[in-house]
View 1 (cartoon, rainbow, N blue to C red):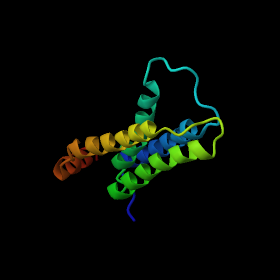
View 2: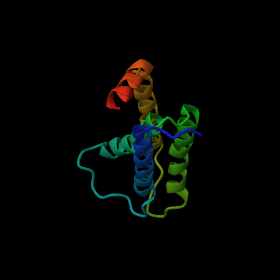
View 3: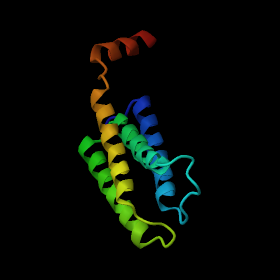
Length: 128
């Protein structure tokens, strides 16, 4: 297995940190306090899925695995909140916001232009 370039390794580390943050947000024993505006919790749900998925895809992890695992986690996290965390509740609209974050990250990944191999090689040789 060849070493990933610096940007891919950085994206992978950031994706791991974002996934840890996601777990804290989703599985903290108590839900956060009052929302600053109606629906702000849905924005948080969207963001905690969009960021790690986008970073994992940027790191070059397989799209099917990343999207599949995070989509499954979106659904499972709401079941866990509803059944295993006594002071939390599962909300189907939270799952929709989670899945929207996954889809949005996938769209951003698909729309991002790929680097041309000649441009990358040119930059690499120009440094040395």
